[in-house]
Image (cartoon, rainbow, N blue to C red; front, side, top):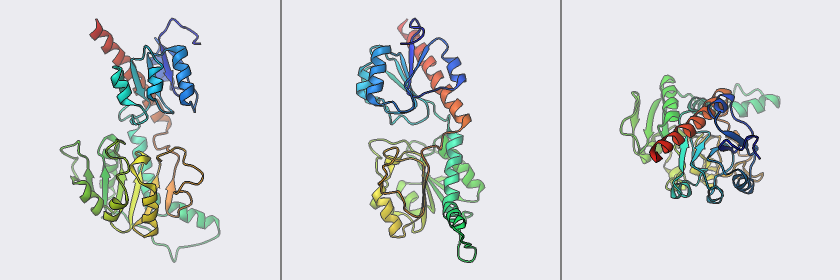
Amino acid sequence: MSADSSKPIVLVTGADLAPEAQAILGEFELVYAGRAPTEDDLVRLCQAHDPVAIIVRYGRITARIITACSNLKVISKHGSGIDTIDVDAASSRGIAVKAAAGANAAAVAEHTWALILACAKSVTELNDRMHAGHWDKATHKSLELDGLTLGLIGLGAIGARVAAIGIAMGMCVIVFDPYVKSSPAGTVLQTLDDVLSNSDVLSLHCPLTASNRGFLDRNAFARMRTGAVLVNTARGGLIDDAAMVDAFKSGKLRAAGLDTFAAEPPSADHVLRGVPGITLSPHIGGVTSAAYTKMGVGAARNIVETLAIQTAVSN
């Protein structure tokens, strides 16, 4: 049980929270679920502590977990993506769902460019070759980005930062985002088909929804430029992985950098493992010390502000 049961409970689906976030939640008792909580773990904790709020770091918040709470008012994501939360189940109970929008934008944008450059310059492959005793100076040619076209799917806080860096690199930047009516100077809004067919580098920065799940499929890859680079720091479910591997085998894709996967961690026999030209990282694009603090603070503020508004309305 909590150390001070007189305080309302905030359940954190993780093992820790930034001190700055803890300070914002000083009027609450924090209960931590650990680094890898299962659905059963979270149901038990909800039944035992009946939280007024949940901060979502790891795991999924399912309808079963939501049903286990009788006093839950707000579910607050420790980050920007809420696809791990059953929003419909929450809405049906009048429970607010909030995200710390933009809190990890700088970190993810930087990691996006780390993957773009790693792909364009064959960083991991050349590193492996060097350690194996090879010297490929006479045979290797990297991809020069200056003058090429960077295509972005999504122009939120992360996509806008990626676009700004692309412009600084001398790239033409084109964007598909059905939710924006104008784009920053130096970028051009295009249709999805045009972005797919015109991009030398394609980078994904959109949320995962029921309507766009697996949209980058065989038909989409067929429309892309031969030799294109694909980077995904958004959500793994946006891509049909088997279709992407086939795109490599056919030469349609030159390289890919992936930080997110449909199932995390991917299985030992996952189709992406061991494919030359695919650079993988374990969904750490937004994991920096600064982003950890900003995401925690954003999640905490969303709880405090949402509860204050609900209290004011009820009064």
